[in-house]
Image (cartoon, rainbow, N blue to C red; front, side, top):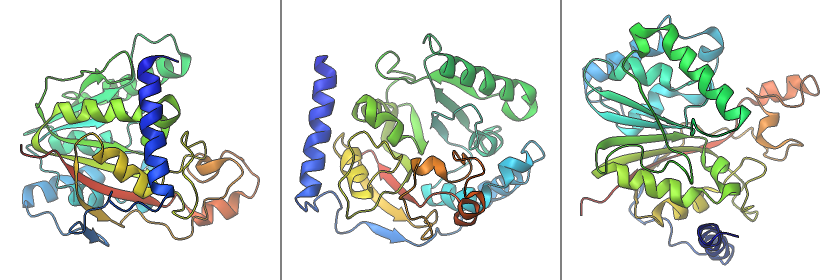
Length: 293
């Protein structure tokens, strides 16, 4: 095992052991908990969000996810402003959040899409990058200013100059990094990219808090306390939590993990109506800050 992999695996082991022992130091006492999010204080950003969400560039399948992902409330909670430099981590092949971020930031801000390593000899990566590029190219009026860079452990770890980004957003990605021992170095790269005082917004599938954390997150679910400890371990401070993406109907005990639920529906027609009725996963929504010092 390479030294870097041993180090990251050891860090994860320490986190899991601490949580299993009932450690609660991961969550500061003064962290706010929010059932939703206050309205955007900047009227121009608020109007831009509404226009982006209603835009004709979004497909019906994308709009169908709004009821589960609450993009307006989520981005409001993170404190998005239309004049920010924002880096979206791993937008995937479909760029669901890119559809909203790109038009909001187009005129006064900057959107950097930090995606997979284009030099990888991997069909999934190559197909995904091609699909994302095709999406951007199809609507230059919406996506023409999106900057695509690579952030992929261990090959591409410096996508932007240090301290050059105001906000970094990652949606349902921590579980992808855990089996590759990539979570710590990916978070370290984000910490380096953010300016002091910059914001990291995290959304992830929430595991049950009374069961041990699988270090490889094979079900796709991550304990919230584990995620907080992981992000804080690289230097971030937790500012607040929102329950805007919570789903109490999610029992988190499915045959094919979180991908049993929509939109993946990995079991195809088996119990399809049941999983559609549950909806997308229960998710935690966390707001962190890079300290000013």
